Image (cartoon, rainbow, N blue to C red; front, side, top):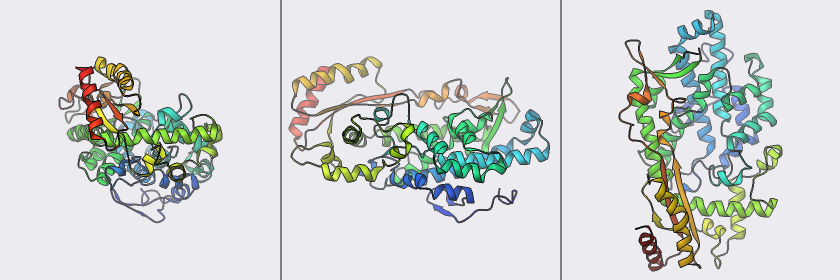
Length: 435
């Protein structure tokens, strides 16, 4: 792209373990060098997963640079594969197409770069509990772009591309008028997933997240729906590779992200973060977007440093458990796909029953939830372009993925320490109750 557009000349390079050499442009390097982005070095990609898979010490920093790279690669391929369609749809001349291609390429990369700047400590730990109501890390990412030096850099360096911080946020929100760019950043097929599956698999030392990335990217194209909107689509040659992406995500969730010990550390980590927030703000909530500078002070280092001070071996408090790699033990689990009645019973009545039977034992209930079947929803389905010029639905055509269903695995954990007999006793009580 730099060869086609002289205004884009890389400065330096990152040697990425997943994608090889990644060359940032001057405006990207300026964003990367900001304190707001450098904070991502101190936000682990997978929380305390390195307590289970010791290699998983990677951060949101490398992931964000990888997503930037993939967003650019995917945008280039889409533009190459869909030039005639876009020129016809938008009535662009060849010159206008070149200008718009440059803008789309730059916008996609910047959005990919900043999409995760709002993550809290340890990425997803406690996200549902500690953000103010109806907000998530994506809302914080958008606010950081709008109200910090990152937005100033975008406005100053990209005005010649007709790109502003507001347009970047529109893309992150999925409200940008070029619809397929929103899908590229947030959808079942987005470049975020394309990067984290390969990256997490690499650092965890597992093969579950591997799939044919290069074939998917080369197969990306566009489809014009009945309303004239440009939707992300894929050529027939990438069909099985796209199935591989969905399956890779499913296996990573069931085997890594929902690993029973990894989830146990999430539970105690959430208890610790909740205590710290309560002490500092009198409420177990992060500062709201209006206090974004205060929020940005929170990172893994802040939490672990405080855990060191608060750790108490006598009480075996959450800080001590996190600090010393001690976790509650699983005493009951449903299968990954329980029926709703079983899940409700395990998460409610069973937990109450065990608390009554063992009142002096610390107990946690956890539900690992994901929707691998989401790709079948009509609003996120992706069209497949057959060589004969016909279009078919990916969701309706993929028989290999037809069996994927909601994951809703429920587990109960107990703080039994090294008392295996007590653990066995609680497990038996759970099984008897659920029989």
